[in-house]
Image 1: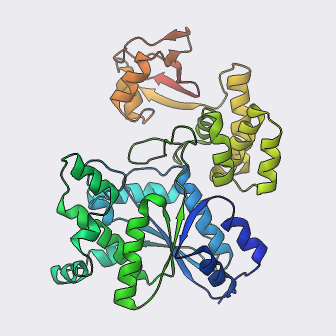
Image 2: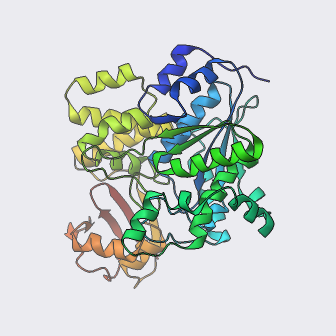
Amino acid sequence: MSKTITDEKVIDAFLDRGIIKTILPTKEEFKSLLMSGKKIRIYIGFDATANTLHLSHAKNIMLLEEFRKLGHEVVLLFGDFTARIGDPSDQHGTRKTFTEKEVLKNIKDWKEQIKNLMNFKDKKNPPKILFNSKWLAKMNMEKVLGLAANVTVQQMIERDMFQKRMKEGKHIFLHEFLYPLMQGYDSVAMEVDVELCGTDQIFNALMGRTLLRKLKNKDKFVVAVNLMENPKTGELMSKSRGTGVFLNTTANEMYGGIMAQPDEMIKVFLINCTKLSILEIDNVLSKNDTMTAKKITAKEVVMVVHGEKKAVAAQDNWEKTFSKKEIPTEIESFVAKKGDTLINVFLDNKIIASKNEFRRLVESGAVTSMENNQKILTPNEVVSSGVYKIGKKRFCKIEIK
């Protein structure tokens, strides 16, 4: 069994980095546990409610990897069962539910996206991937009722989003009350010592703490991490709303996406999504050179997700495309049939997420044919061979066959 690292400087480095928002019951008790040398089990869970994770998720997985490197047992839990219920967190209306097929497809995509964020090849202490359907799908009505007997309705309606819905006269469905119980039971099934979660998940995490105490007579720490919000607007990255910089993008797209972020997000990305030390981050920010700082940030983030070689190439691509106004040499290439419309070609090849998105892009003048430097005026325009520019940072080549 591998030994745990108890170096106080190493532990303080990530506890005080600015990623962790709060630790329950206390930071001091949690630090003492890490310093004790005891190997603990730590997990973070994600419901597979979208086909991609974003950089705020990457930040959480990177933190989990730090605990693994200290020698602790870490678990990445995919909520394949709870995703089908739908977490009401951060929702003013009922969340869409998903089929088993949709959930499993999302998880398959996620595994590819996170492969560089954790060392899955470490044979001595590899991270574990678990699925909560393993225990939740086996629960019968007797088990569910027994679990529900540990929680009151008054406790459930304390949730801020439930309070908001009631004030607005909106429905709260019974299955949404069951969600915190299901997620809470994950802690019981895995008998964890620590749960990492976003601040929007504290209610669910504390539910797990309550159930673990009652059913296993075991305590659990809750380590709540920040949600990477814009310090000026408060806007959050959200996989369900499709906002943020996503892990399924290419290195070039990710680099461009970070360069397109508002200046106030530079420090947020540096702290949460890079491996630079706080001293190195302070040095980057102290020069008061926003463009250089943003380039460093973009390169470092892409390096974490895609590797150094692709990060260097992405930076070079951005310089050619935006600083020198050139069309990049490496761009996505797709094949279309004669007579196809642009909107269908772009949607079929996943260049855009939806027809509505393409219509918005066209209406705002954000789609250009580079062959004649003419903006596309209608979504249903017939496609022609050539290079198209979408927004400020993306190019694709269409070939008619």
